[in-house]
Image (tube, rainbow, N blue to C red; front, top):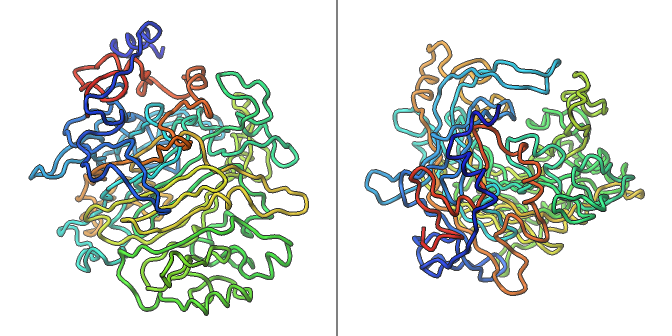
Length: 621
């Protein structure tokens, strides 16, 4: 029984939920309830890319060592004790892999995720096998994930995270990239074996709790037209007049995803992941073929979207994929002469239409997105979006366009890997739909692994909004709302019109490892890190564990004016989540990862943990 796994303290907390009162008090400092009082005064305001001054509404400076993030122990963050069940993961997530600490001189304190090489074989349930059931699975690493799920969420704002990514970068490692300095480009991929993530997800879905995300992730869609998209694929649909569970009638809901950064080694991606995705006749030819990652596809039009022009617009009669995306450079990279582009040459090439079978920097924008924005980036500057005028590391259209999601046993023609090879499972609701990843990859410099870098994301909701990614205040990539809401159409208007992301989003930090990705540990997919121990280079990499992702601080700024629609709530009236989660709580927790309600957390301080500094407690962080 599940109850047998509950600690006495957790059980008492759950039983007390209905009787404990919840009272709000002012913080003694007068700061907003989510603001860490140790955030320096000079960082209380931020000027956005549009010149607006936004106010600090949340921060965590991680200045107190020894914090615990187990369920119920922290005011904002919750760690997980759970195997990672996605992307052919090689790691278990554990509470004790997350902590706060300070460097040796005590000048810098930070949150950290520790990654160790450790073999564990556990028994897990797998729906995606010929006969659903338990199987023994070996994991070769242990790492961490923390979430602010159902505690702290926000709608819109500018999020800044100062982080150092995990890599094998000591002098003893033999990593040849180090000798070239912090501004050199990451080249030797094997020395960066992990997959760190700093990202956001809609509160209706809890990351790696798949029962909560099926038919929820990553919808940002509120239309009711089954001729365009089958509404049964969206669990909370705009077609529902009476959805119950505290939800608003006729409002499509979901858990879209925004990745501040995801990936490792030489490339990091910045993404918005939404659904439903575009139909096949708006996607790249052969979409999903692995050859696209090496630009080696033989199919005409299979390497880059709308390249060559003749096989796309002229044949389809409409544009394909998302239009007007904005790409820029990581200027912390050293400049290279070969990457510099001539602005007039590229603009002329795009206007004339491309006859090549794949992009290169002589004829395509540096982004390799021929539908991207090429306008001037800022007044009194010659720089243009999409064009590499200074030869530094430039953002490129991510060749990964998303995935087709299916229930086990689905007979949909696009479900070969997930569905057709498996027997039908009547215990799982049927679904089959495309999701889209609107994404750019940008090349990392070595300094992202040897020191701290500030990553920023600016998110404004509504039809005139945008999501912009920046590095140390310099733009990397931007998705205008119009690119999402005004998608290309055919005569049948068959391309679903999404809405700009507006769900209350929570924050996640994690480090994963996989045999599936470009950045992978030695012997991934075969066994433990060292293999038979005969390879000297491999041994040096494996000896470098434990590795660490470190976060110096996180800060969120918002427009706090009276006309602003930005919030710091998980259950706003425009997008309620609380009753839905309460009514489906078994989909969001398990015996190792209990949900401790916020009103209890504000009233009871568990196991000697520090009192939370927001809501019902009149004290500072």
